[in-house]
Image 1 (cartoon, helix red, strand yellow):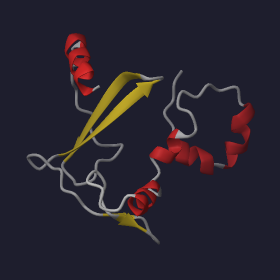
Image 2: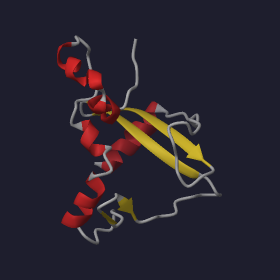
Image 3: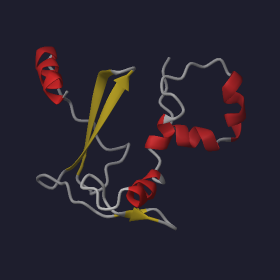
Image 4: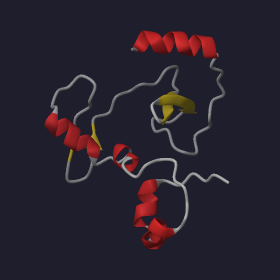
Length: 124
């Protein structure tokens, strides 16, 4: 059985001390929690201020400049799943609100193998 549980929540749980010897197999390595942590945003902005792929961000409370990415009043979020060094899956969520949440509906999609391989080579 597979369960999805955010690492950030797992690290804060009282039971976290038992994780090392629990016998569970975790698909995501622990360092992936750093990539989803909002504290990374101000650190990146401080190191690379003005970089075109970043939005300004800072402390003491984490804030990030707003960028409106809505299309036809819908905000979308795309999640890419990588296993090892290979593309494995894709999730797409849409929301009528500016914030896409874990409860936002998943959007069905189809990826044709020949198409994704051709596009993948183009990205390299």
